[in-house]
Length: 221
Image (cartoon, rainbow, N blue to C red; front, side, top):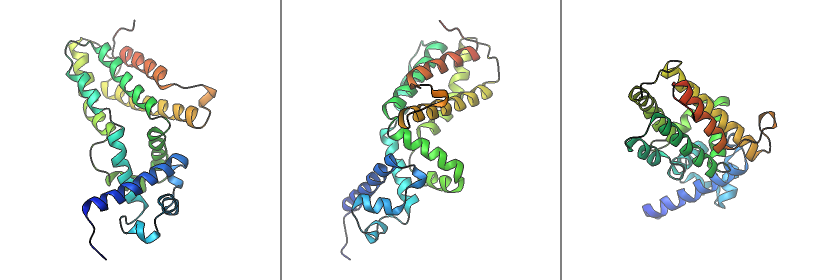
């Protein structure tokens, strides 16, 4: 077999991951098969396995590429570097960023992320292996590492008195984000949400911001 260039190799892998991404937009990630990917790429079975050992390797690379497009780290860091913001202003800005990114990618990347969450529930070992195969830092890995210190610092700076331990409030924030994500996906992608409520990320995150502020003892205007 003639030796191919690294550029050729990477272009083929990109073709395969983009095809897989397109399949994942149409089907739940847990139901996607290697046959689906082969048909989407137009490559032969041997052509696919020349670049990837299995479907989960492809999914890992697909998620790595998704992280480039679905990225709010720079925006978050910009907020945290801005001096003079009150705790309330920081909270609103962070929730606005989360809402903007979710709305922008609700019908594509956010839908796939939701499917991956479902996969993690049904096949935790497989989902864990897929995530371990990804490269780079994910948005929520970043958020988990900086959100607690940031909230605590802002709380101390503004002399606020939380109604619960900051760690417990962070757990609540995480659960609330998941709930907003699920309800918005069901509403936008599948035509219905819980209790037939039309869920819009911007509105839901605004309510979450107010809730976080009140839980930390801040003021909502």
